[in-house]
Length: 445
Image 1 (spheres, rainbow, N blue to C red):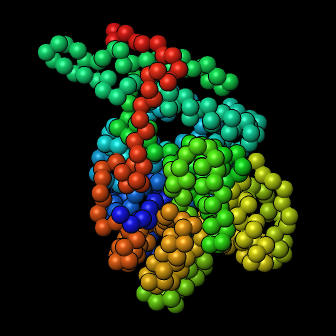
Image 2: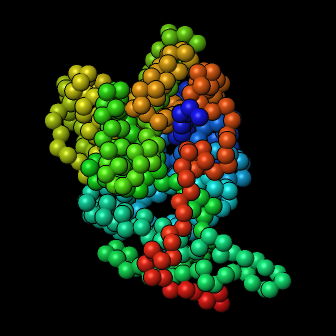
Image 3: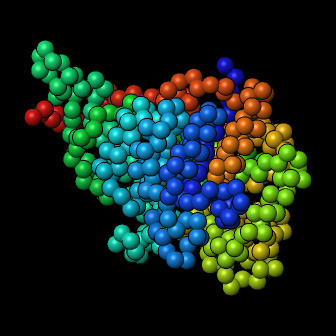
């Protein structure tokens, strides 16, 4: 079977362009469940692998306007479980601002409710503003956040494995509801967590929900190489994407996994026109509606530094390393240097594309672009960021998907039922009893 492209839809009710919500045909509301549901159903009609929801844990008055409010993502996924049947459903949850038992239980439940379609974007938290909402001031440093994240994910996997496959019996003849010999205490004692277990939810249909990550710092790449199934990335140029993917796949191999054990998806905001000129006119219309202050706040968020006092018509100044979104920061600083962009130009670019790659043109031109990145081997697929909802999602499904299918690069129908099926990933087997750490059986009572 030939290699197929993977697609994720990153969506919210307000879209991904800072001014997208102001377009005449945009529907309003980052908390508009009906709008979000219709967008996800459109992506499912197009056989997307994943509908993905990013998250932020603060709603400060000075945040970009479109990000001040949003639906809590796990609650949202629960609603979408009943409105869809095939597309994977993934959301961001921070390991800095949550506890592993609750999150392991939530994702086990979502995977069960969706019949094996749940995915978890594991983040360490990149926003110092959120620290004040969780009693964690000062914001933990980068190394501390990743140390906690590694142990956190280990605990979650241990909790999912605290039930053997087949533990639920439900035998009415014998009166056996659960095989107690297949339930085990985790008894985890670590630097950050003490968790007894077992989880009060059966082992998920996928074994573990699909693990997604987007960290691009050395610590983030090492974490992804060891644990991720999908990595989101934001490189702007094909040669940089190739270098990034080769490096990450090498790290995956060094971690003892096959080089193709994870899928690498690059962020793209497509702006589609019947002609190239029409696509340019759409980009110009979005730019004319943009609030420069909102775009600047988006840029500051992405590079991890306050640039509001910089000369807008001067080159981006040299910036020290950041404790926040290191991947985006590195990519955008390189883009500014390579393209000789001023602060104003970089601000407007980030406002337009949320720091990802903006691709505009006719359906054929956009399909050509995606095909080039995919067939070169740099990308396993793309995270599609519509400027607003619902029109750009429908346009992509109606215009780009058929062109990719005609080239044999994208599926024409779902061939499995779980998110792991869509991604071509095996279900993680339950650890062998003998090889696993000693675990304490639990009474069914």
